[in-house]
Every structure is written in C-alpha cells, then in structure tokens.
Image (cartoon, helix red, strand yellow):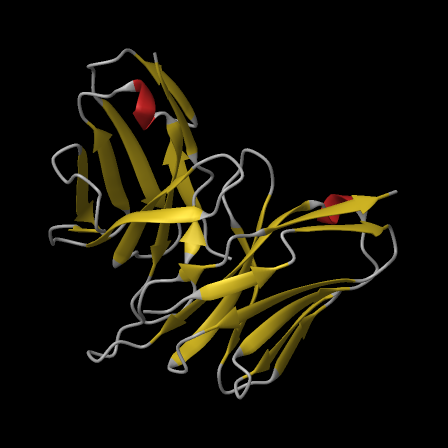
Length: 115
Length: 116
C-alpha cells in the first residue's frame, strides 16, 4: 500500500505555545488529506478534510482558529495546534487519498502532550 | 447520516482459531468498506477492503464478506496468530453527488487478543 509519514512522532510542548505536525504522502499524490484525533481506547474522530490548494473543511465542534490546517502541495499537509492547552493532548493521525482511488492511507500518528 | 456499528468490542481467541468481526451500516448508498488494523501507538493500517459490487474478497488468512441487502459486512481471520492481536476498525463511505468518494465513517473498533 501507499506510504504516509508524519513528523514528529511525539511532541511535548508547554501550555500556550503552538506546535506543528507534518503529514506527507511519500509515493502518491494526495489530492485529499484528513486529520483525525484519537482518544485512548476510542475510535478515530475526523477533525477536518483538506483538498490541495483549498481551505480545509472542519467538522462540527472543531475550532478552525485553534487547529490550523494547510495543504499547500499534493504531498504535504500540516496541522498547527495554536495556544495549546493540556486538553489538546491526544493522538493526532493524518491520512491521505488520491481522488481517483477509494483507498485511504494513514500516517503513524503523532502523540501530543501539553504540559 | 451514515452510522456504522461494530461488534464485538473485544474478542479473545486461541492461536489457530478463527476470528470474526461484524459491522452494520445504515446508509444503503454506501459502496466502499475498508478494514483497518491498529497496533498500540501506531496509525491504522489498511488490511483489506471491499466494494459494493463484490460479495466476498480474500487475501491469504483474511477475508471480508458483504451483504448489501442486510447492510452488514464482516472480517474473517483464519488461523489466528499472536501478531494478529490489535484493534480492528471497519468503515464505510459512499460516492458524493459530484462523483468523489465521501468521508469514511468508522466503527468503534474491536480489540482482538490472540492467546498463544
């Protein structure tokens, strides 16, 4: 299957600071990228969907000014958590797909801890 | 909107036995049904998928069956091994009016434990 990478895999930041997570599709052009959040022992919660060159579409209840998403190229999307709070601590996972296929591939995830 | 129910939430089997995880979906327009395996601390890995024009698909020890009439699909793992232990998620999506595939709707997951 296709490969999606995420960086960093783990990050610890202080409350009030911002942190950026990168998601890259390594061997295909990702016309659409997704950002999910996952709490322990729970399913994946879709935060937003982004198409290359367009503004992200956020799910209901997700603050777009807090979770900034940029999908500037067909291989890179970034999620910036602004003014992080301890309650933002979670496992963030990106995924990517090409418009012409059904399959959606996930990155390895980023564990964010806000102290 | 679409709703995907997954059962059981936990499943424990002996090594070598078969494991079956079932999902039901609510939207009859759904046409794509992938299964993901997620190991602890890692992202979900696509292990098999099926489209609505097919009733069954097999890949070595893994198979997926789809019953469109009943709106349910199942994952079958035969000859289970300890490395099959993980959380498995089913999902469903449908084609949008514009032609692109809609977002995946996930089940709540099944924690499979394979005991040696």
